[in-house]
Image 1 (tube, helix red, strand yellow):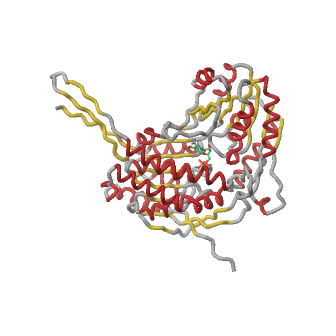
Image 2: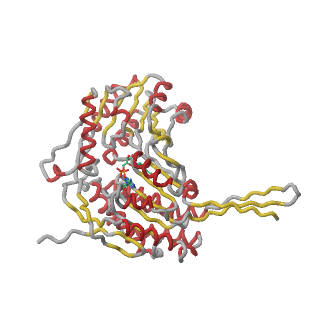
Image 3: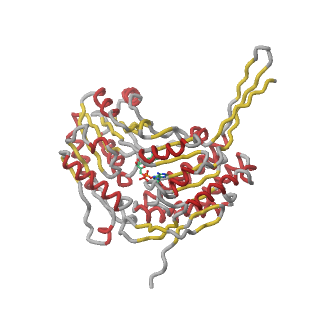
Amino acid sequence: MSSPLPLLRNYVAGEFVASEKTFPNVSPIDGRTLSQVCEATAALVDRAVAAAKSAQEGPWAEFSVSQRADMLMRIADGIERRFEEFVAAEVADTGRPVQQARTLDIARGVHNFRTFAELVRQSGSEFFEMRAADGSDVFSYTVRKPHGVVAIISPWNLPMLLLTWKVAPALACGNSVVIKPSEDSPSSATLLAEVMHEAGLPAGVFNLVHGFGPNSAGEFLTRNPDVDAITFTGESRTGATIMKAAAEGVRDVSFELGGKNAAVVFADCDFDAAVAGVLRSSFTNSGQVCLCSERVYVERPIYERFVAAMKAGAEQLKIGYPDEDGVNMGSLISHKHRDKVLGYFELARSEGANEITGGGVPVFGDERDNGAYVQPTIWTGLSDDARCVREEVFGPVCHIAPFDTEDEVIRRVNDSAYGLATALWTRDLKRAHKVSRRFHVGMVWVNTWFLRDLRTPFGGARLSGLGREGGRHSLDFYSEISTICVNA
Ligand SMILES: NC(=O)c1ccc[n+]([C@@H]2O[C@H](COP(=O)([O-])OP(=O)(O)OC[C@H]3O[C@@H](n4cnc5c(N)ncnc54)[C@H](O)[C@@H]3O)[C@@H](O)[C@H]2O)c1
Ligand SMILES: O=C/C=C/C=C(\O)C(=O)O
């Protein structure tokens, strides 16, 4: 008799709450059901929002900025104490390499809380002096207050990193939160609720509801009129839907959405560093990072050599179990997402792509053949108008095209509905500064990729997002700022 599967519960008003309705959490490594997840009903979502709202009138409202910062440090310590449990949870849900979960996902979870604890502790406000017409002195200053209840809806690609990137500043600024993690990555969010409980966060300040989007916990949450602000990371079309819901009651929104990012490689680059960098920016997390380069433009003199080096690098990537020595790539998040990516592999062939490498699924001859693996794939030969060059695939794939001039490559990079990030490889830093500011994107990395200073603004233009988070930009979004003017 097999033991019952773990049950991942909601967390509302300081208590773990089961639901009658559950859904399976399926391993993308071998298709096994890992756990059953309690789907929050509309009534339970309403209870969570009500708990968050009343927590604004409770002990949490009496916390000073420094006490809130101390609480965030306790949460960071709590995650660190259970670090390997978080690693195991993230790896089980997503199939990613253990090494990545350790050094990126969970490490950033701890770092996000510590960063915003220090940022809010050091944050001041603004002060202005002027003289009124009657000669009296006028002093104006600003104060930051919490919005109140913040809904946080997060995706499955970097579950812990992206959830805590929002929870940390929201709590730092004194809000209560109701989080709705992706249905495809429920485990680390559930562990985070346990850490919040253990840290002694006042009941109702942190709430977790599991479920899906439309006609489920996600939609119920965004439509609840007692939600004061919504922060969302996910697909652009989902963002548009949520924006419509937020319009009722004119709620503040912060969106980090999709991308179709470019890597631009000039002939004067450090060739080996550029190859290694573009392999990283194309295949990290099986290409399931919003910042990944799905479009690669290479200056013509080194184009053939670069394609050959990328082919060799992609074919050396080790795809396998998360804890295998030297594994570089795991599975995709789900069979559904794998089928979407395989659909683009098929579409590329019909659009006339040269398939330099990949284009299918690896055969393991074991249980992993029930998983959601695909091969790292490289295309060339597609036109800039091809759907595979314009639409976000969100898998381990890139298209490499040659270019001849700066103006040409800038025009082609900007010819996109998205505007999230560009990676630029050149030794000529004068050119780098000049070219970087001409890309219509939220972020440009020069001779690196996904290197993050959390004090900087992070976000996208066009379909890639609305607003910026990071550093004081997060404190601004998660606060209601008042100006107080005193006629002395
Ligand atoms: N810009 C960024 O920083 C960033 C970061 C990570 C992922 N992304 C984007 O996210 C996408 C992949 O993540 P995903 O597949 O989880 O995205 P998704 O939009 O399908 O889902 C994201 C979250 O929104 C919820 N949701 C879906 N429909 C909803 C609705 N109508 N109302 C309320 N909630 C709803 C989902 O349940 C999930 O929790 C990619 O497009 C990627 O580019 C962007
Ligand atoms: O998949 C997208 C990655 C987003 C990363 C961040 O939001 C971050 O590094 O803070």
